[in-house]
Image 1 (cartoon, rainbow, N blue to C red):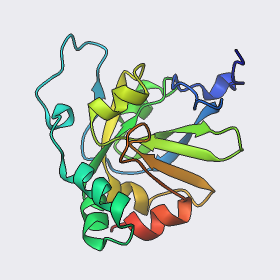
Image 2: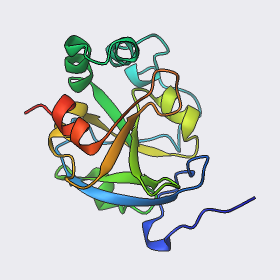
Image 3: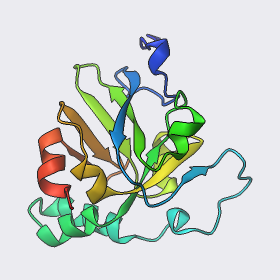
Image 4: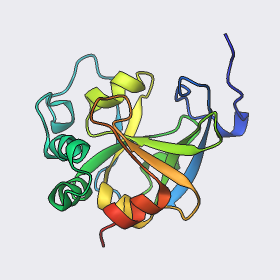
Length: 178
């Protein structure tokens, strides 16, 4: 088994992509709608919208976009939704709760591209990244409006059948909201 190379200063605790990746973080200024959520101390799934197995508006929008990529109503719904952004393990407590910045978990793919995974529910996040213990709940449109200019892709529900991955320009063009 080939072990991925990881920069010790950029450890996020996120497992690598199947092809082998290096993880890191990218700070992004953002005003999230909620504080950090910590799953380490949960012995059961809490009865919250993030744990609801029914199709949320965000998931329905992803399903619609898998059929019609130009569905503007679905894009607006998705941009107006909140997503779960895993808090990298190397992020300090101050970064984990800051109202001004958000540390993005960046996974480097074997081809050299970088991607930030976000999720529409705890169930989706746990399906791909079961070791993540903390996350931030962030409005996707606000995150997209502050998206870094560098070549950094965004993957929504990366491990699911309704996943959506956008280039950096696609994030800013299709999802950014004031």
